Amino acid sequence: MVPRRPRQLRHFLLDASIRVNTGNTVRESALCPFRPRHLAKPAGSRHTRRVPKSVTNESILKRFRGYLTIEKGLARLTVAAYTTDIGQFAEFLEDRSRDLVAADRDDVRQFLHQLFSHHVDGRSVGRKLSALRQLYRYLLLDRDVHHDPTLNIDSPKQWRVLPKSLAQKEMELTLRNQRHIGRRKLDKAIATRDKAMLELLYACGLRVTEIVNAKLEDLKIDMGYLLVHGKGDKERVTPIGAPALKCLQQYLEDARPIISAGKNSPLLFVRNGGQALTRQRVWQMVQEAALVSGRRASPHMFRHSCATHMVENGADLRTVQTILGHADISTTQVYTHVALDRLKVVYQKHHPRAKAR
Image (cartoon, rainbow, N blue to C red; front, side, top):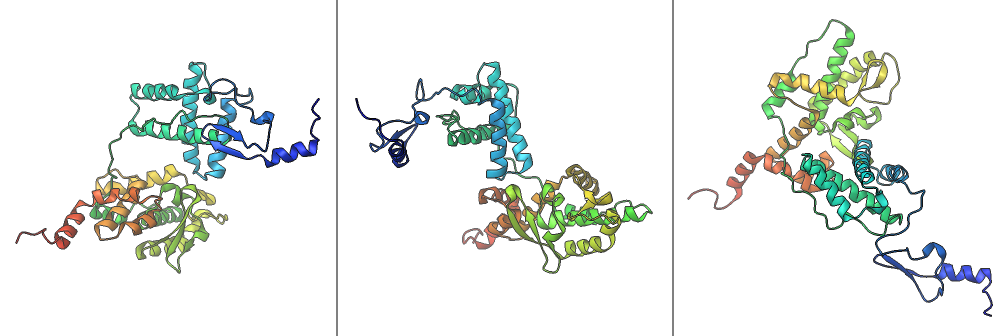
């Protein structure tokens, strides 16, 4: 009879075991002559495993939301979109009597095929596939699955959509547009606030969420810049032009105290009683202001206009990338396709054979 090793020695051997990643399996070094129960090989094929009953679609979604919010630092709306997309995939699997941890490549392909059969746009299908990739990377890290069913599945081909922007003359008309102002002080104060917001949207190329969540402490009027909290809590410093600074100074001195009605708020732009503005209210304000130009505009069109006009006037892409807060310069490069007139002028000026001799 072989004597049983003492508990302390067994624990020492377990701690000293060397776990080497070899693809989809895990092996221990010869130093550990036994395989602990929690590292036992999964039953069945190397691509499947028995999943505990506690691992349900609901629990996975809950954990994944926390992972996206806390560890990845994604924006609230992005987390909500990813959760919705994965929820749709989970419902698709339930109709086939399967769950998220048991899904394979064929399930993902059938899901995408169903989306296209329902005439879902290619960009939306690509986003849903991106959400699934994020999910299964997370499940691989937590060892809830042993393979990624989204591997070797190409993203759907998408037409590159050029950003819509206002022409410089249209933007000038929009910013100079004087809205109908009532006789009340509150009406005049709201008009002053809206004017300042329009100028700041265009001057800094802000997203609508960024201007709604901007705080008083983020604005440095004396230094002429704004600290912007972008996607994933990424911060960037954006300079503010003179017209926008003038409107902001007037808003802070004359309009904000009237709108807030003596209520304290950390937010830069507030509505009645010092409460936060909604994204829908900003959309409505931009659409009303742009009517004078004859165009239907959105807050994001102001952002595109800011970038396009900078490129047209000779700004380099790195500067535009920094101001807009793009993580990848390939996102900024799309504005070179919009500013074609500017590219043509630069080409004719600098290329040695651009002009006929």
